[in-house]
Image (cartoon, rainbow, N blue to C red; front, side):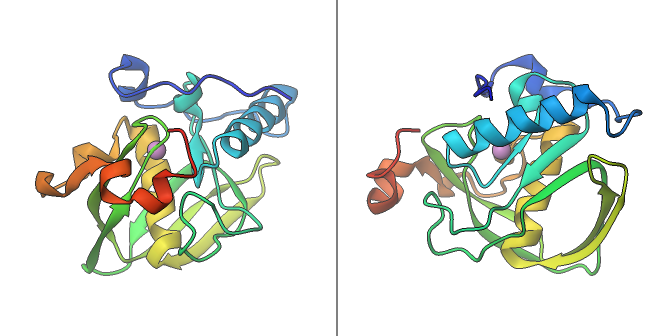
Length: 179
Ligand code: NI
């Protein structure tokens, strides 16, 4: 079990296009996923992408079995390992909502995202994943996969007046966390 350091915005490794995974069910991939899970849980993240711990591979994890203390009013997203993902928007509709990111600590911003998507990819064993998601689930998937294309959520924002410090915007949430 290893809680890894999370890279912060400004680190050039967060801006790379991540490489596809070519070997499934390998020791290296299982160790990577264990580290991602340990690191995400230690930080109470809603998700985490391999580039955030400096690993240049198309691997993200998201979701949990319980509500997330950083997003207490949000629905539960199924606990998922997603490798080599592809996202397809199912219509033109977008919705705005607040996001945070462990690589942008202490901040929140309003980000437009596709409201309804299909996402495909593989789990760590190479078994295919093919799901339709909407709302918060769709948002989390888009946010995490963006890390694989070198995009951080502030780069997706369209209204920078809705960007600020969590402790100012949401003092009740900020009281329980240190990022
Ligand atoms: Ni993030």
